Image (cartoon, rainbow, N blue to C red; front, top):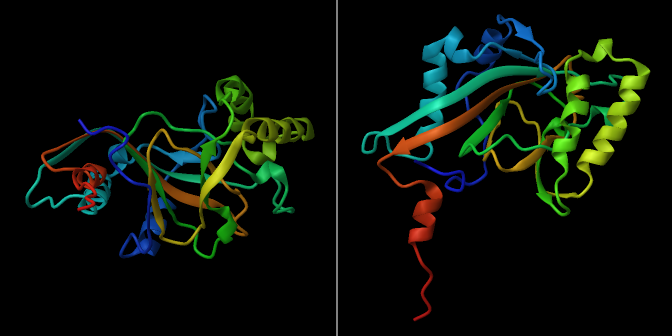
Length: 238
C-alpha cells in the first residue's frame, strides 16, 4: 500500500488534450452545495457514478506520469472525483478577505489534486501549499465554516460575511506560504492529503472558478513510487 509520503507535489500544464471539451462536459452536469458544509461552492455527483470511462481514463492519465503501466500493475480504490464550482463572496472587490479560502488538509490520501478549468481566470485565484508555524487549531473552526459553506454566496447576510472574514483571519494565522500556484487554464496540480493548502481567491474575474478535483485514498502497485526511487539512490562522497 502506497503511503502519503511517496509522491512529490507537482504541477503539470496542458493536462487535458482537449480541455474545452472537458468544460463542455462539466457544464452539462448538475451541481449542489454540500449539505454538511464540508467544502465551499457546489460539486457534481461523483464522476464514477456519471461517466465511469471518463473517471477511469483520468486516473489512468494521472498514474501514467508516475508508472510505466506496461510493466507494472497499478490498482486504486476509494478514489473520488468531482467537478467543483466556487464563486466570489464579494464579486465587486477582488481583494476582500472573504474571497480567500480557508487553510485545511484533506486527510491521509497519498494523492489529491485538481485541474483548473476556467479559461482566462485571474491567475491569483490559484492555490497555495502552506507550512505550519504554530499548532493547527483547525478543528475548532469546522462548525463555523459549515454554517458558511452550506449557503450559496448570494444567500449570505452581512453578518455571515463578517463572521467569515474573522474565521479566515483566525484559521489562516499560524501558517507560512511554501508554494504558490497560479490558476492557469488546463493546469493540473498534485499534492498529498496531509498538505495544508488553500484557495488563494474565489474571484476569477469570470462567473465561476471551475476545477476538477480528485482524492485517491488507496494505491497498490508492483512498481516504486517517485519518492521511493529517489530514496533508493544515496549520495556518495568517494
